[in-house]
Length: 241
Image: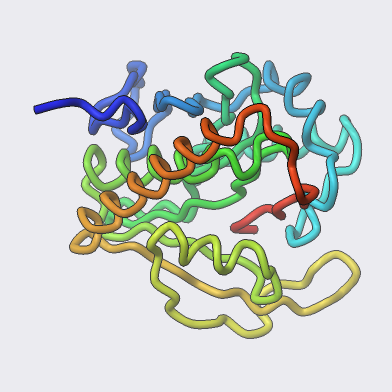
């Protein structure tokens, strides 16, 4: 059987450092072909600061850092949640350059139900529409379903987010409904949140379709090298929070 070299190098195993507790979700590095996900730390702040303030990345989130101190506070908050086991944040590393170009995390972790959420997902403008975001989702869901044995992976986003809502449908997640008046946003707007999910029974088909989309994107990108872009790239806002 031939191996398709365009597929992300995703397996059910990953590099899992030893821990002294029995938490269901533990720090782990998840390697792919376009990106790898590694545990977020303050060591990533310089790289992230290069890309975190482009466009309107934070327009739909309840925390909206606009400078390096704000970004540091955001990372420190993520690390504090990780220390309690409530969340597991990752830096998204571009495999070609070795630089952090975004972030994502496991959150809303419910080990007793084998359920978690993927959220706070973003990549810098220069790495959008490259397959990086979809591969990150593939890496996280593969780990959740095939290593952790998850029953459900969920996502949520602002009901007004015209980029993230179709994007979640595009990775194979199912729309489940809208939580009305779910969050108070900076400025006082009441946000309605749309919920999406992938469940254990759906995962094999979702995985195959997502791999196919990533493969198509890589082929399209390879064919477009050296050609001028006919349209300007618009930043995709953050999903999840």
